[in-house]
Image (tube, rainbow, N blue to C red; front, side):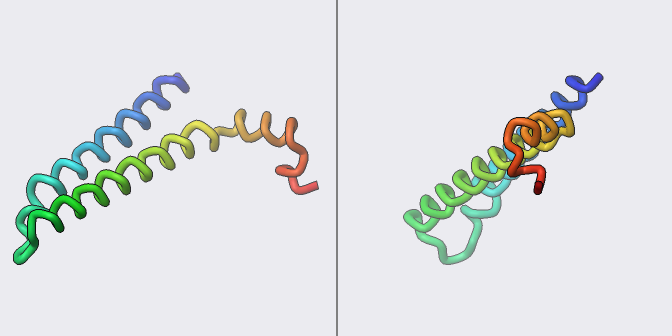
Length: 83
């Protein structure tokens, strides 16, 4: 059951980041009035970078912030437990 929930979370995060990226790059950024082609390219690169960074952070959050993983990390690295 747990792995199914994990896959659903990953599917949602990856799907949402893909949708946001596509909407920004095909609808919003090209239709900003007065923006030049070079600025459109730069805006696209920034959107890609932020999208990938955000996705990576969320995937890391999903995998690491599980109770079992945190417990194992605290056992291995006692500095994390605050003692």
